[in-house]
Image (cartoon, rainbow, N blue to C red; front, side, top):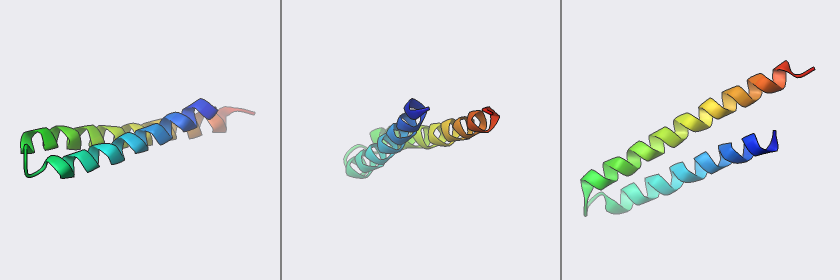
Length: 62
C-alpha cells in the first residue's frame, strides 16, 4: 500500500511542476503553456482517482 501513497504524492508533484512551467511560458509560448495546464489537470485527476481507489481497497481489507 505504500507504493500507492507514493504514486499519489508524485502526481501532486507533477501537477505543481506543470503549473509552474505553464506560468513561466505563458507570455512566451501560450500554446505550450496550455499543454502544461492540461498535464496539471490530468495529474490532479489521477491523484484523486488513485486516492479514491486506495481508500476503497483499504476499507475492503478485514
